[in-house]
Image (cartoon, rainbow, N blue to C red; front, side, top):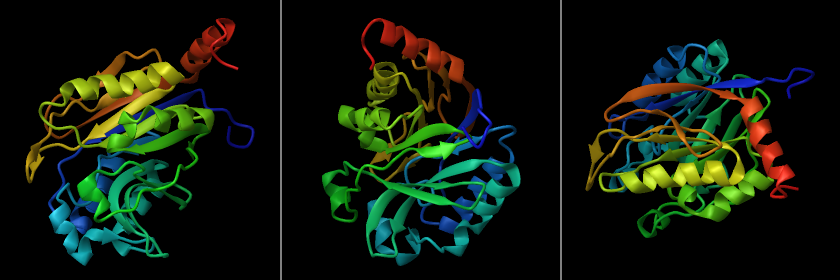
Length: 260
């Protein structure tokens, strides 16, 4: 609900993106192009570290870190404002308080910025990033969108907390690699079905030091089935989410005594 307007549908675009390694400015320009070309999308979700690529050694370069007033993000902010789209990019985030987060950064059309850091970083990531605290969902046209960063989606309690805060959509910016196809099939399907949320996964495309993406970005229905799949390689897939489907399944659960 925004004011007196309730939006029954939300159009989402999931970008399976292969970043230019370490080039925040160029990756921001490419993200802005995706936002501008996303048609009637309300939300565009990019993968883990979409502004740099996943190479932790490269983060020794200060230029790879993004800040709240970073002018390199202006092109994405402008595309978001011009097209009425909330863009969620993946960044190594340096906060004004000095905190370093492996973050999903939501840039909204009204100029607001929501930064949500990974809560369950790996051992290697903990040398660079702090675990973040649970965050409330982001409002996108009256839909409550919970942001998750990669392994967060593998922790059932992460999605549970999001659901208890009223999330309608569980949006995961991720890196799933070759050999992890089964995990990519199970994680979003389980989170969606267990909590009657739509689930989105934007997976990095291409390859980096020691990894190659398995592709497979997509959208999952709140009954657990996959709605769209990106396949392999860089591409953008879209889906139209219907609130009526959420309401129907949640009502069924309440009648069965599974929801309060």
